[in-house]
Image 1 (cartoon, helix red, strand yellow):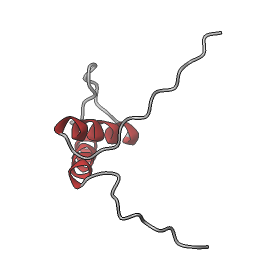
Image 2 (cartoon, rainbow, N blue to C red; image 1 turned 90 degrees about the horizontal axis):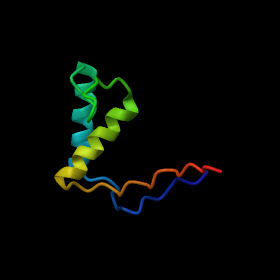
Image 3 (cartoon, one colour; image 1 turned 60 degrees about the horizontal axis):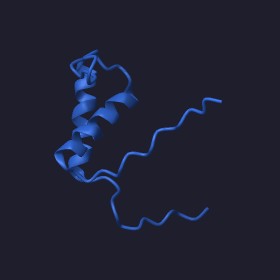
Image 4 (cartoon, rainbow, N blue to C red; image 1 turned 60 degrees about the vertical axis):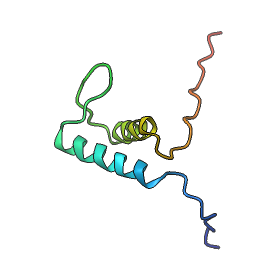
Length: 74
């Protein structure tokens, strides 16, 4: 199987990875809180999402969010 070629272009900047790293540490420590409800985050995926969101707010290089799925009400 052939090795994948990297285009040399990073999808996420270093600052974004630092933010996610920080969010993961806070999750492990038990101090990471979710936005409006303020509940403690336990999910790994949610911690990553929070880290990327913080990075986006700070202006780090993060790809745009994908559009949410639309529920069909038929």
